[in-house]
Image 1 (cartoon, rainbow, N blue to C red):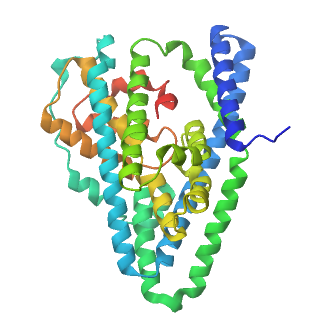
Image 2: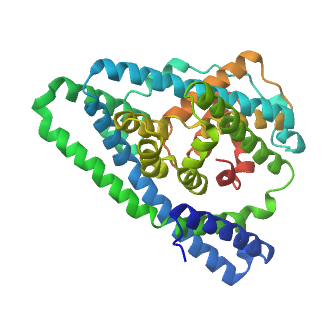
Image 3: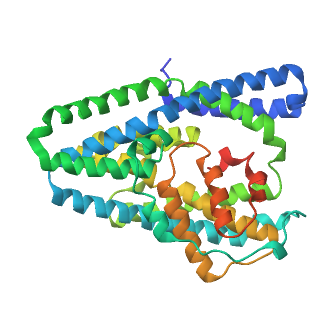
Length: 383
């Protein structure tokens, strides 16, 4: 019998977890003793897996970005590639958010809820978001604090500056450059070891999540999920496919087929960093992208090109407005798109981080954060 690949094992585990979760939920969930013990075990296993993934993110991204910048060896190449990369990330994320807003306004997931705690009378139009502050916060004050807190954008900014310094110093930092190169190889091997546990981790996470919240994923919450998924599909199937055809001159069907393993890992784990080893290998070996470009763009994209997270930020704000029966102005929608993209660029690439940061976004718009409680249970399904 042919040995199953990692993504195949992961998808099987995902399906089994969903089925077990609904069975446990139908049988009484945590109210039944043995089910409560089983769910606790699932949560324990899933929690360890998530901690291992979070363990990887900072050293892996730091080593990849620093090593890729240093290996470019030419400041002109860095300037050109860097500007194009960030511009691409911002534009694609902004378009994704617009897709999400349009879908959410059409399907109106919040229109089916009635919450006494939320009312239009309590709303104050305070969408005075300081975009300049958001950009300023990307630059670290204390890199050690940034490393400790896992502030990815600040870590990336420091790594880029350090890489530029290594290019300028050249042979003087040859030993350090070798150390960083070895560190990157080490982190990829550690990542490989952690990914072995992906099917077990996904099984535990999905069983616990569906068993706890499965019966509540009905009505308007299903519409909420649909809005997120439709926006994601439009982004992938329409926007990126058009770019592949007209910019990259590639067959999109062939491209997606070659990337099926990283895509399946991303869907199952919801962690961009977890796809890096397979994604980088696919780019260089199957697509033919130069290694220097792959080593710079993909690690950066794993934390800064989080289209799904940006869509979620826009979706939760409009969803809350629908709950309250209010309408944002055109200028507020523009600010929402910009802020959603900036927050997505700056947040860490770990599961559920958007759930935490969405409270900050809602507050900045003068909206109550109680709406977050409605989507907490389904967050793993939509982001």
